[in-house]
Image 1 (cartoon, helix red, strand yellow):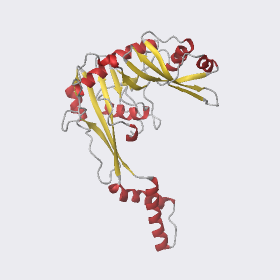
Image 2 (cartoon, rainbow, N blue to C red):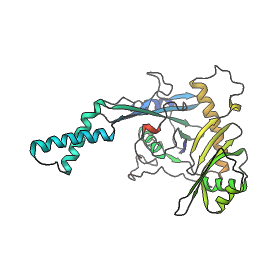
Image 3 (cartoon, rainbow, N blue to C red):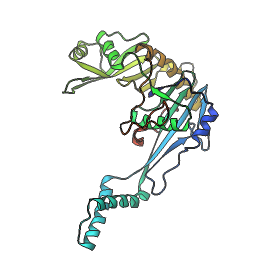
Image 4 (tube, rainbow, N blue to C red):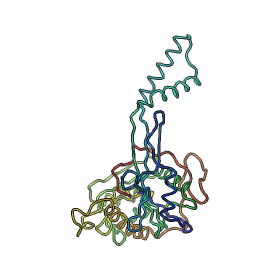
Length: 328
């Protein structure tokens, strides 16, 4: 997950969020439409609300669909069109005409293309002012947050920023074998050299309290990923970019629960309940929150979409989204 801090001046009701999301509902791709995106009911029920509140926590779901056109199929179609022109006119299409042929071939093939769908859970904690996205890709997060900023007047967010960088903290924890209070170091990490060699050392299912790991860090390799467990309740992989991957709720979380306690509301309550307690402890372990977050970057252009908000990012790739992900 990727975490943002919501600016304190933003005040809105769940009904206003519902009304705003209704302006951009998800609709499947048309015959010649290459991509479609929008909001779907997070509960998964047809015609259900687009914004749900469970225990005061707001949950949304973003959906994207793209048409899949294999490059080899498109290239063959373009070649067929180019060959036909050469046979009929005796000349080969130029660069500009070849581009037009490619666009024409794509329109011909799109109605027959397979579609691929993916979704992303979105959780808004209005009390703690957190916006949490169920993804580890910054480019995908940028697009979803930008759309939210466009739809929700006054919304301004910044990436969560801490006094101590995750990389510096992870390096200290591994070197001293002293994780922060409430956390334990697990058996997986990745170390990367900062020099030109870019050498990478990965440990999986391996003890990390060994001299070899400390020697790598002493030699200049920096942690980019480290597996941790919080309070014997949640295990996760912390990255250098302050992203949390491989989130797993441990058995202690479910003690006292009945087998039939599952379902959307129970899943949301467990996930948001645990993570809302984990985040403050993690922020404290990283030296506390820094003043002012980092506005999500745009590798394409630095065009803000809303005052104090975020900038537009690249498109979401449904291949990297999980339709069976957590409910938020």
